[in-house]
Length: 72
Image (cartoon, rainbow, N blue to C red; front, side, top):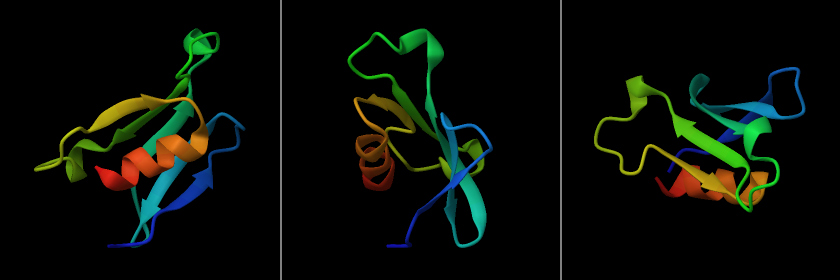
């Protein structure tokens, strides 16, 4: 499995997920979900989503979102 890296976008609530020097997705703290128990949203870019399930989800913490992204 390829190592995944988080690259900040300039905002402390938005990260690009990088694999093999390509942006393959995002992890974002949703401002509309801050009071929710799973405010971190992750998604795989459409160009890399074929054959993957799920391609997006929610998590309680950024680290949990990264693990869910990697499992997908």
